[in-house]
Image 1 (cartoon, rainbow, N blue to C red):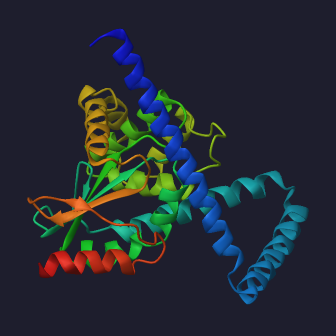
Image 2: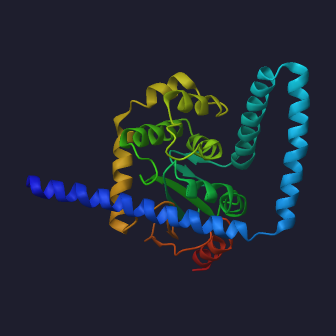
Image 3: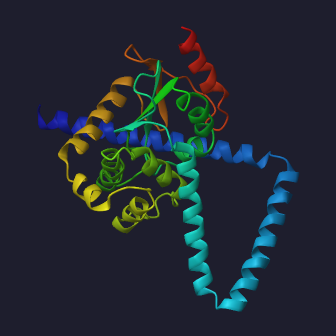
Length: 276
């Protein structure tokens, strides 16, 4: 391919990423607007809880010096998230990047970027119901695929996605993925460091850290990320999360726009494929 064609292809990819970021920002703004319309009673309830927690924290800080209390709180919060993820996933088969019975009749392909805040909305919103109702029941399996949208640095994107896929070699990719979204930091803050990736790995129950560290060097994982991006490009996806759904082993089709917090749209699509 001529140099000019390479430049044009790179420019096109850059334009797609920028367009995806713009769409994502618009989605975030729309979600924020919807949040502002939620009931004032809920907001007042949250404020009341915050005030009570603040009073308790101040009292504990005053009695114990502050610093050690903060560390204990952080550890407790991290432990709580690990327990939440484990409760959601325990007992469900995993293989590589796939969650669910390999013989499940319906497949949902989920394209995500671990730093994507909209993916986090899906993870905390509709996904738990989908997992409990369909994946745990053996009716659905979910394949997680990587698509760079929110992560600005390609090398950081590669390393974070490889970290999750490497956990998949020990059948714990989804534990790592879920924990990443639960612990997700502020976008563009540079929070994804080697220390952060290691901390998440230590939060995955049963993960052999030395083996995981060695598995991250496996070149097939980087190749998988490239293949995922090519599939997304072929489908015309330029934003995350994006989805394909269909009968397992058959042709998959795009899942139309649906709420990421209300699972009903996903449920309707899954039921349709189960009946079809």
